[in-house]
Length: 160
Image 1: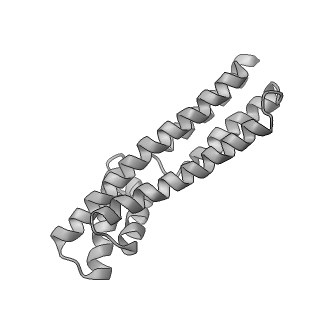
Image 2: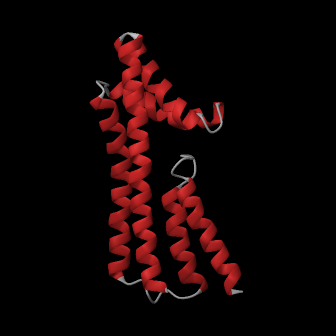
């Protein structure tokens, strides 16, 4: 039975990392779900107040990194709040319109179109902002991947 329980927990951890590039999956919830299921299936003993405090801080860091990377990417390339919103909407819609490539095309088009429509920017300037949104997204994926890996390493140090 232990193999089945570990299988479920590992699937949740894999889903958390898949969420880095499939934004519709709630990655943080999958990760925390794996921790909680470990406690339910085995024991909560290794999870003291320090564990939950550190994991909670990592979760806050994850959300902050996601927002900051997108915002900095768009702002660094001359974008506005409209570009940030367009990028975010494009990130959510893109993968459904163009599977796989939509994860990059969506934020680019979203930020570009938002800047052109809201601020009447030319195609060249708007496209640069779109590139900034892609740079921000990729930076966010890398940063969140490192944070999630740290969360898992801490978990495994305690339970193994």
